[in-house]
Image 1 (tube, rainbow, N blue to C red):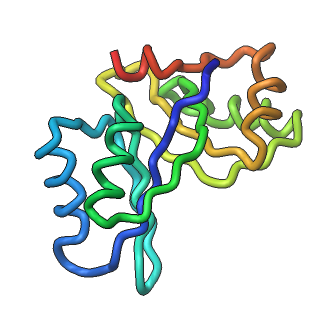
Image 2: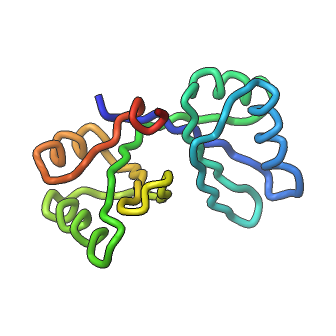
Image 3: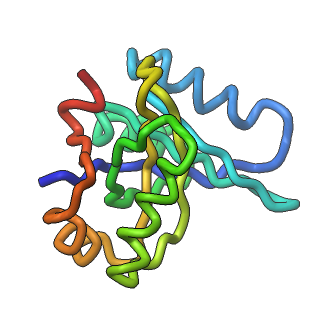
Length: 143
């Protein structure tokens, strides 16, 4: 299975909201591998990849946060002009709809890692599994 469990938290758009998330995780010895924040005028959606996602979801919910989980896929993308276009050519060929995505390098200068949330994760995995893409497993991501 190549899915990675992502946590999404609804946080108020007020000073200190994100630091409270960080503090709760820190106090429970849970480390964030990567994150993304999207905001609206009233609240933000903080998306987190954490190795111990079940434990993190439990302590965050216990601290009063609304926590949702989602299956996401992480793919490597060549860190060069056209690298992302090659990935989207594959996704377009399979008519796959991307709900959102975010990227990070994880110390790999030649490749970036892009986290994709697809409208239908199972269908996306089935369609791209035979393609020339490098899927990153949770074990590899958190190693």
